[in-house]
Structures are given as structure tokens and as C-alpha cells.
Length: 558
Image 1 (cartoon, helix red, strand yellow):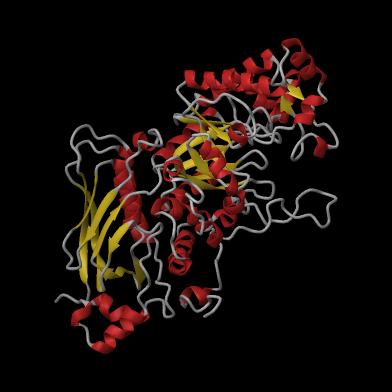
Image 2 (image 1 turned 90 degrees about the horizontal axis):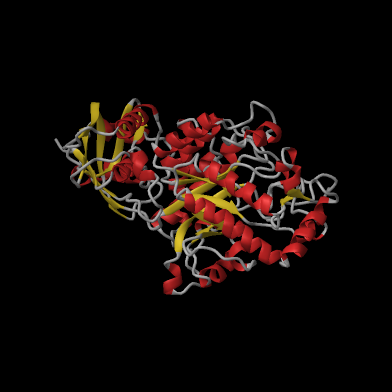
């Protein structure tokens, strides 16, 4: 007998509705409907690929992972009794035996990994998921394997556990979903502190669970150079914190493949011409003001040191390095940075001043030449350049029309970048910096705070409007956005709690679109955080558990 809300006695129905959690999916689907019918997974539940000849290995693996999560999550509903009062209706619910997964397009089937590294504006991630309430087969359809993967992610978030039974109280489900923005990222800095490959892979898993599709890997900086670049191995040999704290070409391949199989592109960054002090350990001839003191006059943070951008030899060296590094990554995107250039460093550097004088160039003209040459090298290896906002709005340099700008200093700078006509990625420190509010880390500074105080809560980032102060045409330049973790005070010990679940807020913002209500979102984010912990990611609590079990009762004016 079908058990649904209309057939339940009034008293049972009232109890059921009182303990029914909100739809658990994060990010929330763009279009969806749910019901009030209990449904449980059959002990023999299976996910079946239908009509997909020679299914790609990563799709088969994604199905297996989803099946594993369904068995092992064991997440109880976030209601006061954790689902106990629903036990009777769960036992009497219809059983779902299978989910059928199929492509709506014909022709050669490409892997998730192939589709994940497509040009950011060409990726197809939409899907349709239908779960009937009567126990008949559920269906997941998409016109790409990447879309199927996103749908599997959604399916895995719909279920709870009670006494060994995996169930939902909200069947039927009808979901039609696709992202509002093509770029949804997370930046991780592995230069200030090193992160083992296992930590990066765990982070990639968590990113995939909230449909983040780009790891912006800020892999090197002034503090260390852990990337082993073929042809430039001296940089990591002399610039890594230790011989064991490096990313070999094999490590990079492992990370890139692991990411791609989870629908994630890896955009690497080698920041130039600033943030390059560490290169002096191998090539002092290319670095101005190396570890100059006091560092506050020569850099935004220690150690000081910048590439001698007016030197032809340094420009050629940098171009070759960027080409070699970019060739390690299959992504079409590669970031050359370009932020926080310190003019005083060059003013005090005799070699740079001599080069400028002999070439009869200003520093800005030399920067223009440096940028054009290095970016031309990237185009030769098939890469599209990504830069920090200063290269667009502070410096007079020639950038290719397809250059993408990361707007980081302030969200108020977005309009100025858009006026230049470049595609842009939101990365504003006043909304998306995960390190803000951690206190000052510079020594001999007792009352110091982080430069971007205060702490950026998930609610703050969730409230962001990607098209604020933009015209309709300028709004089309927005590719998406990302959270960022600069790691002056982060390492393997606190990676998970610093990032999660806060970074999930921008994942929903740029998948589902802006304008979401934090009151509606909070119970779902609690749910996600608890599920992360079940899956081995150490996400921090957003509130006391009592609040998570009593939605709305810890609101400011409750």
C-alpha cells in the first residue's frame, strides 16, 4: 500500500511534517519540486547506466562512489529526535530499487575528465533528476557525462539514515538543474605553507560535493617554490621548504586527474613579476630587492623580491618557465598573477634602473613589454591568461581581449574592471577571503589584526550580488567567483575547518544564482556540514547542535 501524506491519519501527518527536514541539496537546484511521501532505498538498490556504450571509467567510478556514499553516509535527519518519530512511516514506505542514468545525446561518449577541462565557457553541466514516490525507477538524464556527475552528486544528498534504512520523507522529486555561472572556484595557496597531496585530494572531493568546478592552485610564491617544473628543477630544489615538500610532475598529474574525474579543472598560478623572491635562491640575477629590509618598504609581506621585469634575460627566463609550468596542466587557463607590484623595489634596484635607462622606458612600459612577451608564450602552449585586477585597472599594459581578471582588492572595483571589457571572476577580499579575521601574524605587532578584518562569515559571502553596479551588458562579463585561502596561518592541521563549510556558500551563490535567503539556506548548510563530517571532511559547526536541530530558533530575532 502506498504511504503518502494524503493517506496518513492527521496526528501522524502532523508529527511527520514537524520532523521533516528541508530539502538537503547544496547547492539548491535551480528548479525543483518535492512532495511529502516517505520513500526508502531497497537493500538491493543499484545505479544503472542505460544506453551508454563503453561507459568512461570515471563515470563508472562516479556511480560506485555515489553508491558507497548512500551506504556509508549514515546521516540522521537534523530534527530533535533525529528521525525516531518517523520510524513507522519509514518502515511502511515504498522501496526504490534503482536509479537509471542515461545520456540524452548520441555519438561518442566523452569522459567526465575530458568535459571538466573544456573551456570554462563551453562546459555543459545541466541534468534532470526524477524520483517517483511509488517506488518505480528513478531517472537521471543529461546531455554530458559532466552533467550526469552533477546529478549523481545531487542524488547522494537527498537521503537520511534511520536504524540502517536509507530514506527520504519528501518524494517525489523533480529536479531540472544547471549552473547560473560557468566558473565556481576555490583558491588554495600551497606556498606559504605546504599541503600534502592527500589534503588536496580530500579538498577536491569536498569541492565536488558542492559542484565547485575549478581549483585555482596558487602553487608558488615568495616564501617557497614547491612545484618541480621540468627544465627548471633547481627552483624547487633550492626553493621548497624541504625535499619532501614538493609537487613532482607525477604529483601534479595525480592531482589533475583526480580533480578532472570529479568534474574539476585545475588552474595553476605562478605569480609574476611580484611574489617571486624565492627564485633568487637559484637565480639571483633575475630578482630585485631580494629579502630587502625593512620588508614593509619593498613588499606587502616578507620576504621581498620581484623579477627584474626590465631585463630581457629575465623576461625570456620567465616566459620559458611559464610555458614549462603551464604545459604540466591540461586546463586552458593559467594565471600569471600580476598583483602587488612594489615600485620602490625597482627604484632602489640598480640593475633595473640601468635597463630602463638603456631602453629609454618607464617602469610601466617595461611591465607592458614583460606582460606581452610572457603572455605570448602562454598562448603558444594553448593557454588563456588570467591576471589579478591590478593588471587591468592600475597598470597600462596590453592584454589580449580574452584575458580574465580576478577582482580581489574590493568588490567596489568590479565595475572598473568591467568597463575595460574583460571577462572577470569575483574573488573580493571583502566577501570571499577565508583568512580574514584570523588575527595579525606579523611578529612584534601585539595589537595587529589581519589586513582584511573582520572574519567573513558564510552569510556575508552568500549575500554577495555578482552584478551589483554593472550594466546589463557588463553583467555578461561575469564568469563566476570563488573563495580563496591564503595560508599564512593555515596548514594541514586546520585546512578543513577554515574552508568548510564557508566555501560552500559561494558554490551555491554561483551555481544557483544570487538572492538566496540565509534563513532558508542555513538548515541546508547545517545538513551539508554534518554530511561532510560523515564523509571524513572536518567541517566546523556553524552553530550549537541544538540550533541545527531547531531551525530558526537561533535567529537574531527568534
